[in-house]
Image 1 (cartoon, rainbow, N blue to C red):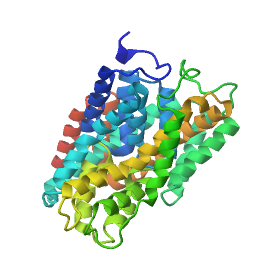
Image 2: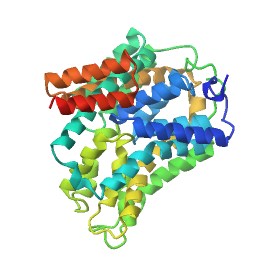
Image 3: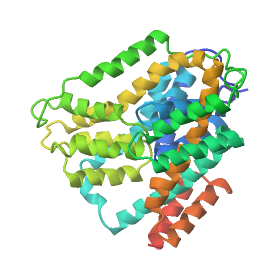
Length: 411
């Protein structure tokens, strides 16, 4: 059995330059092709990492997603970071983040210098076509993950309860509340006599990150919140205040995606660093690009008014907004191998996994469906894209091109 098709990893993965390069290029390809936002990215990860390459089991994937949903930061990037660590150690985690983020970050850097070209009827039609693709991709992700994470009536009930919490609640913490209620439901309703099912290596798994490294990551996560932030204008010396503003934003976001945007607006528009027009142009572009939405940090940092070194500030914004989420995941992973063998933790995490399905269903309905499906034509285009994905299983790039073309033609 080949390395990329082998069984689940047992113990810390042995360092291998080949594995490291493999992780980098796999996630670089995902970064170039993963349209649809953070929820859709998880569907792409499920297909590429679990089904095609078998780097981990569906249960392990679900556990990582549950952890990422419960932590602050971008869930899809945190999931990719953790999958890279499982495959090739901590350098593999860094390689996964770099590969998945680099394409969209490079495009956002470029757009910081040319956002005026993002207006016009054709751009609007293309953007709407990509949003219709996102509806189909998220629908496929919900279908796949329901089968693996909510396969019975009890866990499907927890999923529907989590969906209701997200849809009826308000604020950026409703996803965290749904996860917490799912954990409580798992403790009450998903009892078992052992730890987590679904992986033959569950009893011998150990993170390649040491517990000491986890403690240091937790300490860094907290310490960077107190990094000095200069008041008022970003000049002179803008690097520290820009990094601090983006770090604080990334460290306070639960649910990722759309939740980060109002916090970013408060951090960069209100103090006058970026105009409202520039901010909205970047938001629209980020929706149309593959890869993580948090890459908008590169665009906003590079767009700071009056900055003499826009690329440096763009890099500060990019690293600042991602770093707290990655540190949070690094702090938790070293203790995962011990926790997952615990019976109570296993029951709670089964409930968390089920609630993740509910969060996915809620995200599919709002904001994705409510903001995207505006006519019967939109419905039929999205349904056709979904069928091409699920029934005919065409490559995603073909579906993207076909859906955008249909959106332009039927506008």
